[in-house]
Image (cartoon, rainbow, N blue to C red; front, side, top):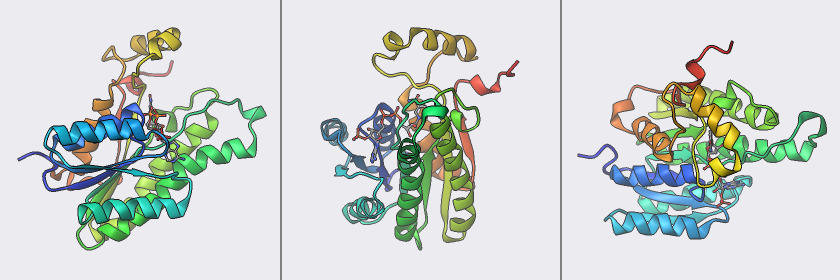
Length: 251
Ligand SMILES: NC(=O)c1ccc[n+]([C@@H]2O[C@H](COP(=O)([O-])OP(=O)(O)OC[C@H]3O[C@@H](n4cnc5c(N)ncnc54)[C@H](OP(=O)(O)O)[C@@H]3O)[C@@H](O)[C@H]2O)c1
């Protein structure tokens, strides 16, 4: 028996590498997967076709998750398609860079609305569907939630809040059988990253005890664990997936 056989899962933001990696790992472990995207419908459809080509079940759902009603609609469509919802992975997010002195309130709000408020709204909608039969919610946070990077104050603050939302939600939804956790990845490799940021990638490799960048499936594996029966007594936890970078003393 695979780890997620019989589950219906919704993964948001599958147009990006990490969301795609999570969705594919969920399908490999037997989940029927609703793949959410906003603009990247081609990438989402390609991932869905790959799942179906391997004998799995997949559907593509679209919407801008900065809108609360859209969050409710997307969660509702996933549950209707799957005949219920067992797992939600809140992965969609933005990572713009901006220095604090010049940051506008709109720029701040755009990051908080996308990375944090969507997590609140999607989780609330999913919990309504899961109430009675239980389920799991996993937020994709970041190690920048505890170790901020320059030009990322809005991002780091939003990710710290996402971790705290998971802990608070674990308290309130636990009695309904709903577990809520977060995963905090370190730097995850993607096509072109090494060319675009050779110095950063070199520094990361040197700092990581495991000597490499993360892969989308590293994050996917952590999410599979948290959604599976292996984590049935795990809630309110932040699982750091960073090759050991944050284990290093800062001096
Ligand atoms: N990459 C890393 O090294 C890293 C490290 C730690 C944490 N993370 C976190 O991991 C998650 C995925 O990262 P990634 O690198 O795969 O990012 P990405 O390639 O930029 O993909 C993020 C996805 O989020 C979706 N999205 C953005 N704004 C949205 C909105 N308003 N409504 C709905 N969907 C929206 C986008 O959808 P469309 O493309 O369909 O528009 C996009 O496909 C993010 O939460 C990120 O903060 C990433």
